[in-house]
Amino acid sequence: MLRRLPEQKGRKVRFLFEGEQVSALEGDSVAAALMAAGAGTTRTTPKSGAPRAPYCMMGVCFECLVEIDGVPNRQSCLVEVRDGMRVRRQQGAPGLPGEADDDPV
Image: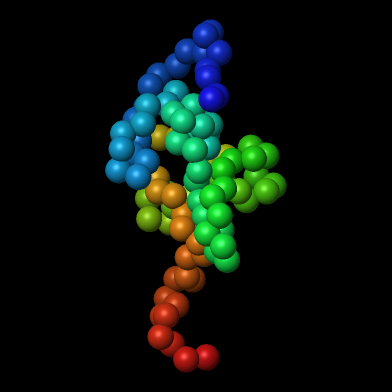
């Protein structure tokens, strides 16, 4: 389990992850805050549904994709946590805005 260094200090912020309140430090990325809180996975793969979690922590691998405040495909390692944000695991591949499931192509 990831733990903070004892000397890390800062203003606490709170956000929701899957409806549960999580505390973080101002300046944390969403991915770092979730890892520190022991959240485990952040998304599932579109094809097999396999669980994924933050890996590179610098925006290269896309393993940390989450939905933030209703917007899917956000790289949680690149987004700074803020008070009141709502974060959810991303399940598979979300559709594009305005895309209808029953729209014949």
